[in-house]
Image (tube, rainbow, N blue to C red; front, side, top):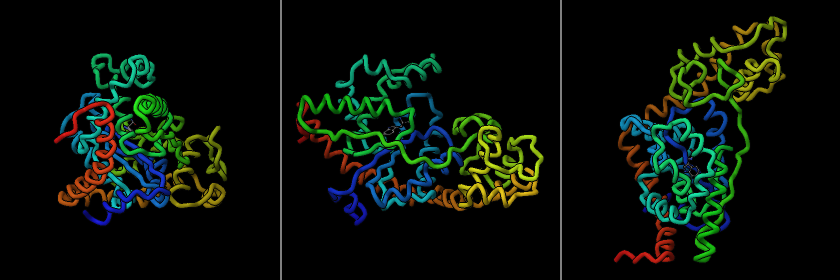
Length: 347
Ligand code: TRP
């Protein structure tokens, strides 16, 4: 095995473990980057981090097979292009580590019908997709519990919508440990320190979403510069024409506040500096400057992602190495579980 693998698998007691899964269900946006991914690279200095593409979870809603495959690999490449070093983090595709599906089944048998029925996300998703309320959608939290518990993490960084699933994971782990002794570490949800909360460019009171259909209110990591400039030129502001119309007032000027936040995040300037910079200028100049700052921020990410996606050998190696590192840790937990519940060891 290579040094990186040994390093990751070397049980260094002091380093805390962090794990998170991301469904490859939409293209990553400027909001995903400035709000979250940008801060992930530096986490690796402090934590052992696992990030996986939750492709098995994506199957709970109907996918176009070729699109799912493309997005899964594309997301993997994008994370690397955003600065996640694959030697310092464990990046892998969920379905490449069969232990997830296997422990998922076992944990299904320790997760109660009543618990699953109470999950807000299940209720919402089944109301929205009434024609495809499948078993996987219902038992999804048991698979998520398996994803987490296999790696014995200390922290699971999730957004508010996933907190309930992490709570359920803790309940299932307690139940299992109560029967069989200490098998699983009890993980804590980790609400990451917030980066920018980027809003939709056309509806600045709504968060920029990767599943938004129209596309003009959001900027994707792979958008080309002309598209980005066009979207910023059309961004909603307000009818203020004063000398200092570029000033931070999220309550009364949400569109301008959003653009200032994006500009601040891309250039490192603070709001007072931005107001001074655009004193006497109208929104036209300001929006063009924000667009340019975003173009320059995303350019290296887009170019690097494109380069990686074309490099089939590199991507394959990335997937293989990640899956090997992950499997080593996951299989250790799975062997313990199999023994505890009474499955015959594989000869
Ligand atoms: N359910 C998560 C989401 O939809 C994705 C996910 C799957 C996940 N397994 C996980 C997140 C394990 C954290 C830990 O966003």
